[in-house]
Amino acid sequence: MKSSAIAHSNIALIKYWGRSQEHDPYLNIPSHDSVSMTKYGLIPNTHLETHTTIDFSDVHKEDTAFLEGEVLTGRKMERILKVVNPLRKYANIDRKFKVMSRNDFPTQAGLASSASGFAALAIAAVNAFGISFSKEEISTCARLGSGSATRSIHGGFVYWHKGNSHETSYAEQICGPEEFDMNVVIALVHEGKKEVTSDVGHESAWTSPFNDVRTKKSQGQAIEIKNAILNDDFSKVGRIAEENCRYMHVVMMTSDPPLFYWHPDTLRLIKSIQRLRKESLECYSTIDAGPNVHCLCRPEDTYELQKMLEKMKFVRKTIPAKPANDSCVTKEHLF
Ligand code: PMV
Image 1 (tube, protein in one colour):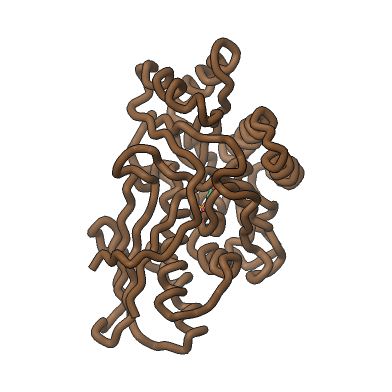
Image 2 (cartoon, helix red, strand yellow):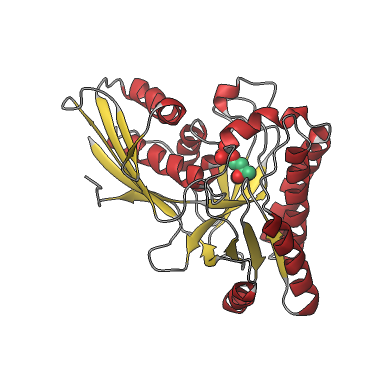
C-alpha cells in the first residue's frame, strides 16, 4: 500500500484568512470563498512542487513522517494525522504509515509549502487505499491539513467554495492552465522561516475590527475575479488581487496580537511594482503570509519583468512561474 504524488503550490488571488466562527475550527472552513492560481516554477529543479510518498504496512510499528529528512512531531504530525486518520477509517484499514516528503522550494517562506504539502499527502493517501474519490472530494481531505491545500488539488485557476460543512467546503477548477493568460514572478526578499505560521495566524483574524469588512468584501471579490478570469481580463484580475491582498494584511496588522508578515523590503517592492506599472509594464503585486512578493503579469512579459525585478538590489532571487497542471499521482517513490 504505497503511493506517491506530486502537488504544486498556489498563490491566492482572493485570500483565505481566518476560520469561520460558525464551525469547528478543526475543519478549516473559511468565512468566505477564495481563488488562486496553481503554480509551476519555470526554473529547472524549482517547479514549486512537493513530492510525497506514503506507505501503509504492518512493517511500520508506529506512524512516522519526514519532511526534508526531518522527523515531524507535535503540531506538524497532528496535521498529517488530521488528513490520514479519516481516510484510514473510511478504508477500514488499521496499518501504520511512513510518509516522506520533499519540496523543491523554500519551506514556510510564504510560498505556500503547506498547500502543496497537504495536497500531495491527500492524493497519495487516497490512492494508497484505492479509494475512488473525485478531485473535489480529495480537496476536502487536503483542507483538513491546510486550508490553502484545498485549492492545490487542481491545476490552473481554482475556486474554493467556503461551504457550510466538511463535504460542501471544496475546491473546483475555474479554468485550466492554458485558458487564462497570466504568469507570476515571485520576488524573494527574505528566505528565512516565518515567526508565526498561517495555521496559528488564522486564529486571531476575528480580533481585528476590520475583519468583517474584509470578509464581506472578499466574498464579492471572489465572484468578481472568477468572472474576470473567465473573461480573460488580466487588468481586472490584477486590480482585484492587489486590493484583496491589502485588506488581508490590514487585518493581520490590526489583530490581537498583531501580525507583521512584511519585511521593510516588501513595502519597497510593492511601491516599485506600482512604479513599473505606471512607467513600463503592466504588473500587480500580491503577498501571502510571508515577506515575499508575487508579481502578476502577462505571460509575454514574464522574463522582461524578471529582469527588472532582479535589478532591484533588495530582491535576492526571482522565480518565474506559469499556471500548473493538476496535481497527480506519480510512480516515482521517495523510498
Ligand atoms: O492554508 P494555510 O493555513 O497555510 O493558510 C493560507 C493563508 C494565505 O496563504 C495567506 C492565503 C491563502 O488563501 O492561501
